[in-house]
Image: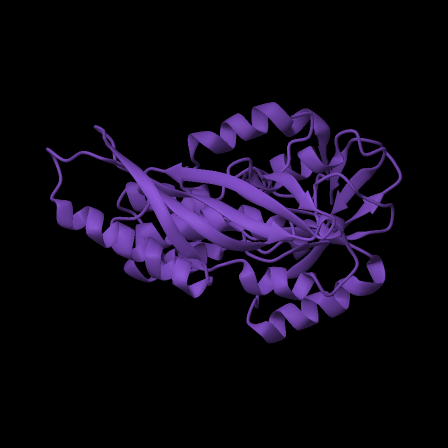
Length: 304
């Protein structure tokens, strides 16, 4: 428990370990089917981030039976099941409780070779950082809840959150990857902070290269920042040094809590360009090299 990794790993034999994770949350979109897809993709992501392949899953459901029609729950579960089928994951059971607030997610078990486990703690000076999905889903979800987001924006962000990190994981496993995580509730800088603490090195980001949904910038300018962004900023800002050229809105969006965000891959500098090229060819089209591991200042994230 001394390492804040994305999932637990238990070694079975010299060539097999299981990865276990669990995640569930309240609805972030109005469409029950799409909510099920997003929740499933989000739960599966931790297995990919650890270098593994998800194999089985169990549903976790809290449902207000007296307030909502059971057909809504059927749609949610169907969305999750279809996403599991897309990932070649077998649903083996689950558990449901009656609750005042709707919640859905999965517990997931995956496989990995013990020598190929990816954690957050193996940074090497000179490594490059690659992000596979754009930021901004937290701000846009806040805009959706506020009735401000257009149908086009809702569709785009829903597709983004429902997209599996499977293709990105399959591609990255071909390269010399040293560390990996997925970007979720702590935001980009929060998850990077977990990687750099105790690493003996620092990180340098190029703000202009970080992919951000343009609509998120617009909504952030309207003040539609989620409460989680302020909590993330208050907790991790002392570790971050921003160049004066980095706009305040961009600074805030780097703390924006993501739902089913992309992978953050730390790999050998000579492989980074090739990885991004192959990711784009595979359809993970907004992947980008966003920074590198530096020798100093130790434990700091420099954003230029």
